[in-house]
Image (cartoon, rainbow, N blue to C red):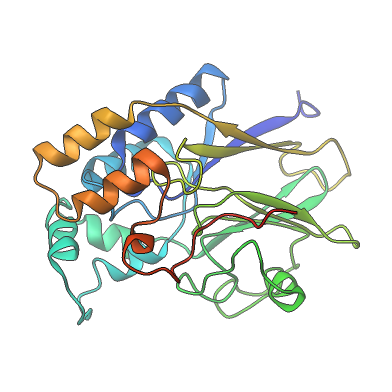
Length: 263
């Protein structure tokens, strides 16, 4: 029926964690949700980027560019490391080109709300906006830019990148939310995704919701796969998927912790 609300599952930042992706997609399927949109960062950090890409190309109705998807297969990239070289070599034929060809953003109408989805910010996949942003950064997320293109500005923006989910509404009704991460969730390492519900394509106001879902999975099986494959930077990966502690925090006390201050 035309007036029946539809649900869209938003996943982001899988980062080669095939075990977490499979668990999340199983939960999505168990809810009867057919539309899955991916907000980027399919590769890097985890061992099975090739498999993640294959599944997302087949399963996701919308795939969006992430920062790792842009810089890892960039033929002009000058910085390299053992980890970057390994993750790049793990990609299948043509997958790097596919990643870099992904759209920057995706706009849709949902219950009269104009929703815009992208990976990190309205200006670049490489510009990060955290939960503790200022007012200018907040409003900048709703702006049209050369990256997003022209057209009606959104009233709802969803994004990923920071691996730290949050939901915020301004006094004028602008709504900003972060999906968190499926494969590399910080603070709470349990994979998280978002369900949007509303009347897709409808300009008329209607019921609308944003739901966050945590899905337990076998993190030890994922660690075992990375170990078996000989993935570099394994200690950092274990820290992230087992404890939700960002690998940079082990070397740099000033590195972002991805958690909110106590109120």
